[in-house]
Image (tube, rainbow, N blue to C red):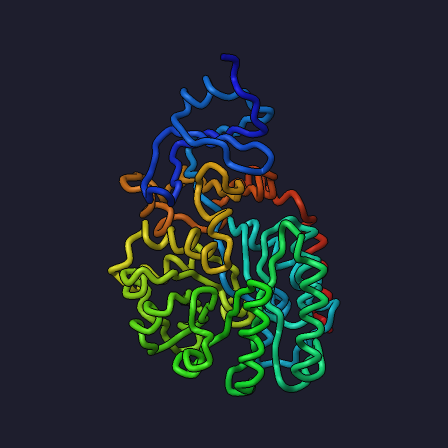
Amino acid sequence: MPPEPVDLLIEARWVLPIAPVNTVFADHAVAVTSGRIVALGPIAQMNARFEPVERVVRRDHALLPGFVNAHTRAAMTLLRGLRSQAAPSASPDFVREGTQLAIAEMLRAGITSFADMYSFPAEVARAASAARMRAAIGLPVADSASLWAEGATGHFEKAEQLWDEYQSDPWVCLYFAPHDAAEVSDPTLIRVRRVADELDARVAMVAPPLERMHGLGLLRPGFTAIGLQNADSELIAATGICVVANVQSDLRLGSRSLAVSTLDSQHVTVAFGTGDPADVGALDILAEARAAALIDNKLTAEDSLRIATLGGATALGFGAITGSIEPGKYADLLCIDLNRLACQPISRVPDAILFSATREQASDVWTSGRAAVSNGRLLAFDEQELSAIANRWSQT
C-alpha cells in the first residue's frame, strides 16, 4: 500500500500523550490532517505509513498537548504594575487590544486554549476567533448595571445576542459567569441555571459559596468553581464540579488554594489558571503547574502536566476535542526544547519539563494543526506592534 497522505508529521525525541495513558514515548511522531490528530506511533512506523505535506523534526524536544489557561482576565495584561496607581478604565478598545496582547503572550508560552472572565466579552471573542485560538468566554451576569449591560435582564439579552453570533464559531464557546455571588440574587442565579440548561452552557464563578450554590441547584457537572479556599472537598467530589486553582495569584494575594492533590485523588477535574495578570504578571501555566507541585509534594510532575493540559480542557468543556494527543482530537500541540543546560541530564522527562524548563523553551505551538509559533518565533502577531500597543496604554 502506498503511504497515506497527511498534512503534517511531527517527529520528536519524546511524546507525552497525557491520555489515554499518562506516560512518555521515546522517538515517536504525530500525524495531523485537516487540523486533527490521525495517529501517534514510533517514528519509523509513521514514516512508512504516512507521506506528509510538511514534516517537522524536533530531535531534542518533548511534544505534548498545549497548555490550557482555565481562568484569566486577558485584557488586564495592560494593567501590569498599575494595581496601586490610576489605571485606564475598561472600554471596548482596551479589552480588544489587551486581549490581543495576552493571546500573543499565551501562544508564545505554549498555551493553546484559555477561559476569560471580564467586561465586553464580544471583544474577547473577536480577538480569539481572529487569532484562531480556542477560547471559553464568560458572559457576565449581574443584578446591577455594569459596563456591559443594565440590570439582570440587560445582561441576559446581551448574552443571548452573543450566543447567537458565536454558536457555530469553531474557536469560541461561551459560558455564564455571574459576578460576585454576594451581589447576585437567588432569582438571578436560578435564571442562570435555567438558561444554561436550555443552551447546554457551562457556568463558572470565582470563590462561590458552595452550600448556597448547591441549594440553588448549580453544583453539578458543567459548573466550575474558581479560586476556592477551605471548601468541602467531599461536596465538590460528590457534585461533579470542576475546580480551577490560581496558585501563583493566591500566593501573591496571601491566600492558598485547596490542596490540588486531594481533589485530584478524589477524581475531581482540576485545572490551572493564571488569574488576573495585574496580580501575577506572566500568563504562564507551566509556572502555575510548577508552583502547585512545589507547594504540594503529593503532586507528581505527571499529575501537574495532566492538570495543565487535559484538566484545563475538561474544565472548559473542551475535553472531548483537545487536551491530549489522541486520534480524532484537534492538534493543539506544544514542543518544548529540552536541549538546555538547566535540563541536563534528563532522567525523567516530566520532571525536566516541570522543574527545569521555562515557557521560553516553547519552540513550536500548533492550534488545530496550524503553526502559531515556529522555532521560537511568533507567527500570527507583530511583536513590535504589540509592544507599541502596550506602551501606548501605559501612558494613558
